Length: 205
Image: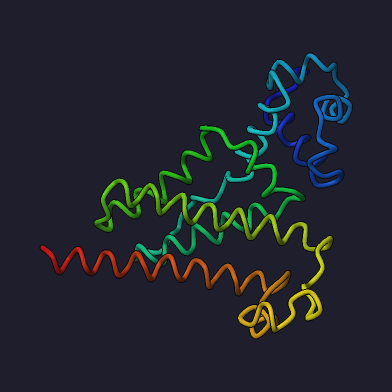
C-alpha cells in the first residue's frame, strides 16, 4: 500500500510534538512510516517543503465555521484559533515562522481574515496589513510562550531604578508569563485602532 501525503504530514507533526523542530527530519519521517527516504521526498522534495506542508496542516481548521457575524468578533475568533493551533504543537510557532507557504489552509485562513476586513469597509491595503500585523503579534507571543520554560524573569537588580526608572516602576509587567492577557491586550489595541479608523472613515463620507 502506497504512502500518502497526508500520512507524511501526520508523521511529521507527531515527530514535531515528540522531538521538537530540530528533531524533525526527512529521515525521521521515513523511519516513522517504515518507508524509504525517497518515498518521503516524493511528497516533499526538501525539508523546507516538508515543514511548509506541516505548517499548513496546523491551520487546517482555523477558518472553519461557524464564525461570529460582527467583523471585530470574527477577527478575534480567527486570531484565537490560530494562536491555539500554534500552541497545540511543540515549536509550532517557530516552525510556521520559518516555513509558511501559499498552501491551501494558510491561504484559506488569510482569505477569511482579509475578506472579513474588506467586507467591513476597510480598503485593501489596510485589510492586508492589519492581517499581517495581527499575524506577527500571534507569532511573537506564541513563540515566547513556547520557550518560556527557558526564560527567566527580569530582576530588580538587572533594572536599577536610577538608570531605568520607567522599567523599574513597571517591572511586574515585564518578562515571561501572563501570555493570555498580553495576547488579549495586544489584539485589543489593534482592533480598537481599526474600529477608530472605520468610524473616522464613515464620518468622512
